[in-house]
Image 1 (cartoon, rainbow, N blue to C red):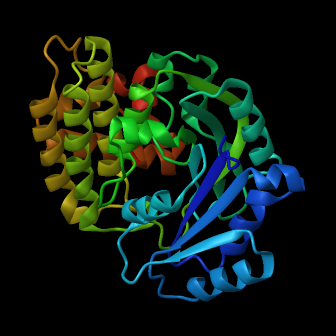
Image 2 (spheres, rainbow, N blue to C red):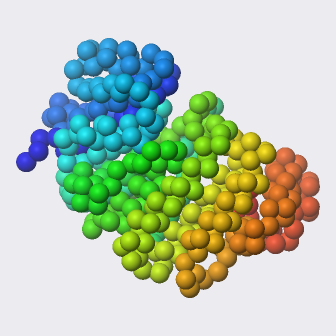
Length: 347
């Protein structure tokens, strides 16, 4: 039996101020026996700062970190693949180097993996803001129901799911290049898994709003999300999914792309109309036959490719966020409970 149960893969780029906290958190509190079941592989993705030297120094001091240095910057997805190629553990956990694990997380994960041996183990997380505020993720409630229709709604990231390494080979799944690399990976591993377990415990702290993070960077590269959804849905469609699954993935796609469309931190104002038009085209291209219908006013505006009204509603929402006394400006259609929930991605 493989002595290494868990390989923790940490891609590293431009995170000098956060790297040690991440590395220290992985083995914190583990006994020597528990530590022997874990290997940590850090991938220096040609980081332009001092991260490469920091990793080498850490490995020299501790002797329990393997460092892979890439000769050129390849991006988060291929860097994870480089670490995966070096992994020997039965399971892999992809941990981002600007995040960290709460005390006891690895021990809890090891215990659950040994007890159940699932294909995928999902864990809960907290969002951590630069001011130190901790906040549960809106999708975490989906972990309460261990069935696939609920678990598909959990935030689709690589770091909240520990995956049996052999499953990735069986499904021929690797990370693809480009931004939003988690899209064609995270839900396919759930869909392809025979068994999924849930550890209803906060095992990950996800840093929000860090300067330099993709989700806090205005760039045309956010348009790469469309290609990633094309790849994910092509993988799913090749497996003849049940209608409920295809419908749910479509709705999740539109919701996610609406979040990107409405986020000032990701798109320049002049790019928003073009992004919305691409979203409307994706809606037409991927709408499943027999889809039950629009999931609210924003979905209807996407289906109609009506950017002017979307822009008006987005601005009205933002005004009410700044000044609650202006709330009557918002149309009655946005005042119902389902519409209020959707309005969150107008910001």
